[in-house]
Length: 253
Length: 253
Image (cartoon, rainbow over all chains, first blue to last red; front, top):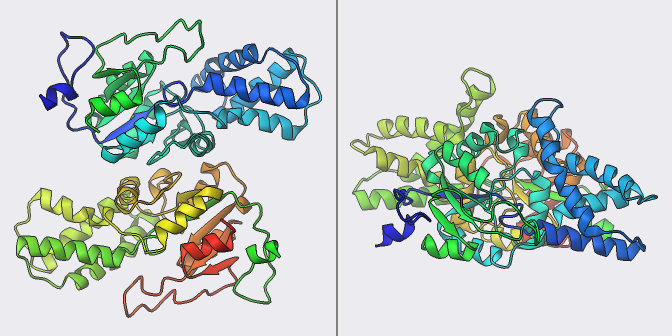
């Protein structure tokens, strides 16, 4: 009964994986644990109010995030040397400030704005869910974010990580093999002892291909009201939940 | 007055360093934060009692630790490929079991014994001191221990690290330059924004040579009643304290 509950997938006919060996849960962070979009829009809007700058900050935030994948892709393809997400965010920010006609910001102000990505709030279930899961498992970030962004956000949002693992450590972004293999080696575990927790089907597909266990978290508003992808689990992930507190319950933590 | 208090070194005549820029405190762990010797002796003794094995577990623990520096030295000199501290501890354990005439342990039991180094207790001031310091600074391990050892010990002892930085990440042991430079780069900070906290003068000497700020913690019983080194600060470290709670007080945290 207990094992059945632990290994219940979203597809009734799927072969249930044994999750009893899992020792570490590694979490995608942007979208899965933190509501980056609401956080960044609120941060930009507050900055604009304080400075008397009028702009469509929602469009600004969405355009900023839209530069994320192409920015990483140039690094992944080797078209440029390693640059972490803070560097990529800053390049995109400078272009967007120009595009939105926002001028005369000081270097200190631009740096402050760029760190909007270090001031992200968790979803309402994130802190209580992680706090429960930490009692039973090693819980770690597994993110394309920088170490500094992840540490700052953890302090800002109160996320009780046991460890911070980032693309910075292996100098490869998801979904490159090096980062999946890297996090498994980082904790000196077998792949089946590591569960990847993510709100993104593609991330889980790669995790599974490296032998990791998989937990899908529904976050249907990560990209706002018009979200077009990752609206449901697209495979028989080992666990499918709507929140991190539900994940804790499902794993008996 | 505040600045003077922050920058008070142990030598009254020394030039006071400005500590106001410090953002991250990185801690030597074995000896500085955890009382490895008392912990390992107690762990081995409990194992012996349960198994009915009589041995001088204090001598065993001291001999185990005595193999630590030569084991790392072979890696540092390039006489062997990278092997982390769990591997080095295990090799030394196997030799000592033989030397002490302890036979017939299973692989599971040997692995359990080796993880005595993952079940270390903090000094009495460690958890309250770190908890206070975490409010104001990023607090991280900076250790030759493995990631797994540091994460397990943190959970066991309740150490509230923001991040775990280990020799494993850079594949170099202290006091090699790569690990000092590595931790500064890991947090994307300037050297003067990082303070090394250690009970070992040699560690601090290397940290200072890389531009880090330095805090010496007196731990005169780390090696037991006959400790022969690191009985006092041997240079004008930026801060000299007897506990991590005193460090918190001195830094205004």
